[in-house]
Length: 153
Image: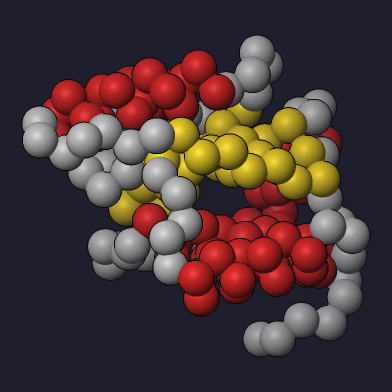
């Protein structure tokens, strides 16, 4: 199954970009992976920025994509539960699973309504750059769990 990540804005912090590059390399033997960045809104009007960002994300989704929105109010999963949920998605016939990381102001209601699953990494507010790194790390960990390979507990 191909995993895709669509993120609002780009990675700006060199250390986080380097970490994400390393995690993409680790994930490569397990899953195809694509990443797409869409332009962030200007921030002068948060509601307008969220709506514009949602439109850009929706245009980037491919027909038939299943997608999970990273959302603080979503469902938290253990690493093992994530591995099972990813496996279920693959067994259900999904060929692509897209993860969406919204921008600074959060996700527009249109993104939440269209999502197949709202995934919460934490109740804490996290920088969107860090969310990308955590998602990559958890996808890698879930792949190792699914193959019964050793991983750091």
